[in-house]
Each structure stands twice: as C-alpha cells, then as structure tokens.
Length: 68
Image (cartoon, rainbow, N blue to C red):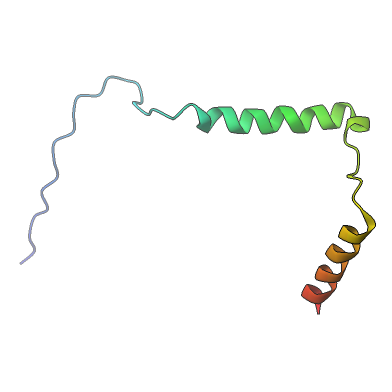
C-alpha cells in the first residue's frame, strides 16, 4: 500500500518571478566585463608587470619545482 504525498498548496501566481539578487551579484560581472572590454579595445594599457629580477627568478624556480 503506497502512502500519498502531501504537497503544500501553491500561492496564487502573480505572473512575475519574485527573485531578489544582491547588488554585487550584477555589479561584479558587469565590472569584469567592462574591464576586459577596455583591455581588448586598447591593449597598450595592458602592460607587463616590471618585477625585480630576484622575484622573477624566485617565481620561475617555484614553477619548476611544481611542474616536476
């Protein structure tokens, strides 16, 4: 004998979704999109970081150790 499942009654549909997002859920992707778009439009602004040779060698050494 199977038991009936009781589902709660659904509220009357108003025809619109009642979903609220925090402000940053839309602002952060929009900011990232605009930033990447600006880099594509003007790639001269995307300059390589000028690091000291010691730091660069350290990062290269770490990368070598990780890839072994």
